[in-house]
Image (tube, rainbow, N blue to C red; front, side, top):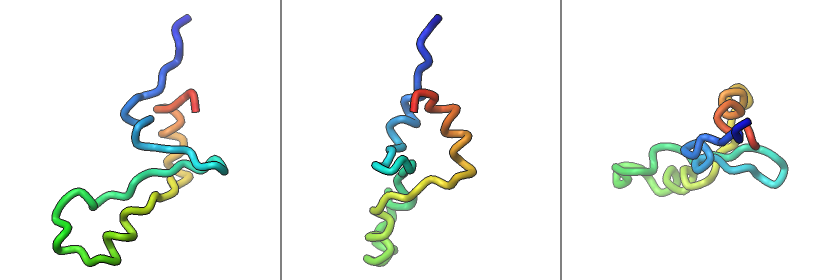
Length: 65
C-alpha cells in the first residue's frame, strides 16, 4: 500500500501553531505597496488563523497533519 502524501503547495503555505490552530499568510502584500498606508501593511504582515469552515478542505490536502 503506498504512502499517503501531503500536497506540497498546501504544506508550504500553512503552519500549525503550538495550540494546534492553523495559520496562514494574509493576501495583498505582494505589490502596489505605495498606495497602502503603514498601519495596513504592518497588519498584513501578521499571520492569520484559518476559518473553521476551511479546515475540512485543508484536511483533504494535508492528510498527515
